[in-house]
Structures are given as structure tokens and as C-alpha cells.
Image 1 (cartoon, rainbow, N blue to C red):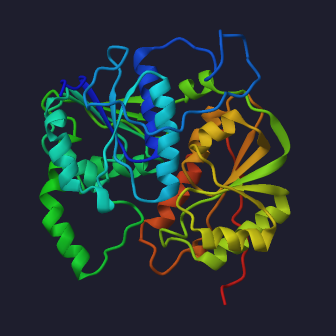
Image 2: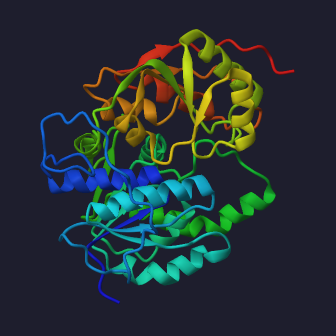
Image 3: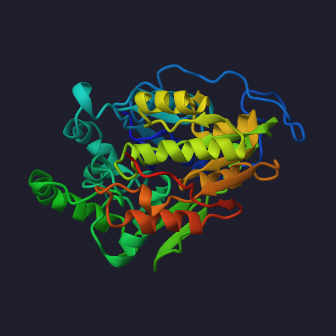
Length: 392
């Protein structure tokens, strides 16, 4: 096995992998290149990219040097749900076409385990000089950070969770997802057993002792003492894709807040129905975690065309066609799409979450966190929460 590159990236979602590509582009200070799949660079090429690779994202032996020095070796730690895996394979294909080395490491389900991943990757993690992670809340990533000795750690966005990560790190709290509640006795026992691993990861991610800590983000956060902060303005995406063809309609971006137990399903359905009627929505871009049953109910109740994207929405929107207005509930895209769609004339609008929509199981942080996502969004139009009748 060859020695790994000085930079190792650990990603678990399509968005994380996209943001690693953005970080690598910014790190290299790369000049603009032709849109993906095209020939020589032409000014403002108004066309769509060609077919994207869909093959298994595997570069052979782990640690094999990429074609260009300084590029990160990307380790994909896929989840088990088919939609996420499919998107990851597509983005991994793009990463390989960009010259990155990509290694697919099963770490969940029947074909893999966290301890198996640690055994396979531990030595490489230990030797890496710089480690890039997309989800500091992930227990798998936290486990892999235990043997890390890197002098530099980088966190790229896994969405709005970066805002909570920065807040918890600044307060010196243990890392805990904002939508997670206390759980039962078994959950508390698991957290107690896992506490040493989580504590080690938090110390690794805290700037101290000469260690460089960087956050590469599109979220509105302030750096902590000793931390470097760089804005992810989706320069790579804008240089490779689009500009998109703009349609006259309105697109609505779905959310997995129902699936995470934060928002009541009936309230959500009523809100989507109201937005569809008031704003002329024709297409619904489903979140990769939304259930087929929920999407079927939405389609039957609203007549919307349900689109299950095979790439992160920033790439889908940039490639087009895309509606002149994109409506979203509080989510990552209200922060990322204004960057990705700069100069296109597309309006991004955000619809507030009415506190009455929250379930009894929603965490105490849910209301303030969702409000913060909306209040801090830049270059978006604010829409009031849709009035919905009480669930029967």
C-alpha cells in the first residue's frame, strides 16, 4: 500500500463531497475552467454539461497518488439509504474526473462496520498531515479522528449543522445534533460509553497547541479564537456548470424535518399545499431522506411533479432548467443557492416554520435553530409561515 497524500478527506454525504471539491478548488487558487464535460473555455457558455460518470468510485489501492500533487485523497464512508448512495456515486464520479483519488469504504450495514473502517483507515489517518471532515457530529468520523495526528484540521459544510457545531465548540459543549432529544435509558448508556471518543474528537477539532483549524463554509458564522474561516462561495460549481436555463415557474425544495421527527407530517402537507397554491409551484425537489410514502401523499394532495435529484441541489440548479423562484423551508440551500446562482436572476425565498408545526418530540433547540437559519440567510426573500389547520 502506498503512503497516503498529506491531505485526507472523510465524507459521508453528497453535499460534503461537493464541498470538498469546492475547498480543493479554493485551496489551489485554481483559474476558471470550461464547464464540466466541455471543450475550451468560452465566455459565459450557456450550455449544459455532458453525461456524468456513474461508475463505482474506486481508484484502486488506497493511497495511490492522484494525477496532481496536493489534491486530497477522498474517503467516501457511504450511508445505507439508496438515494444518498446514488448521489454519492455520481459526485464521486465527478471528483474522479477532476483528478481526485476516491476510495469507497463501507462502514455501515452488513458489508461494513465502524471498527472495520477504523482498522482499514487508522494508519492512513494517523499519517495524514491535514484532515478534512464534513460532519464533526458523526460518530464514525469522531471514531476515525482518535488516531489522528494531523497538524491541520478542516471542517467543510454538511449544511446548517456547521452553525450549531461552531456554537457548541465555542461554548465548550459536547458535540450533539440540534434535533436530537435526550432519548431513552439505552441511548443515554450508549452516549456514556461513547463519551471518551466524542471528547477526543472535540479536542482534535479545537484550535490549540499550534494546530491549525479551518472552517470552510457558506454559513453565517464567526471564527473562534485561533481558527481560520474561509467563505465557500461555490466558485468551483459556477466555473464548471451553467449558467442554467430559467423557466417561468416556481420550484419548491423539500425538507427531511418530518423524517427527523421535528415537524408534524399533517402540518407539513398543509404548508406545501398552501405554498403551491399561493406561489404557483410546479416542481418539488425532494430531499434525499424524504420517504416515498410522504412524497406520494404530497403528489396526490398537490399535483406537484416530484423530482428526486441525483446530485446535490446546488449542481442541479446550476445545470438547470430551474424556476425563476425557488422556495425553501429553513435549510442549507437558503444559504448555498444564492452563491451558486449568483448573477442568474433566480430568486431564492424562504418560508418560516411556524412553531405550531413542531412535534412534541422536537428538541428544545428546534425553534430557535430554525429561526436562526432563516434570519441569517443572505440575498433571500422572506415568506411568512403558512397558516395550517390543526391536525386532526
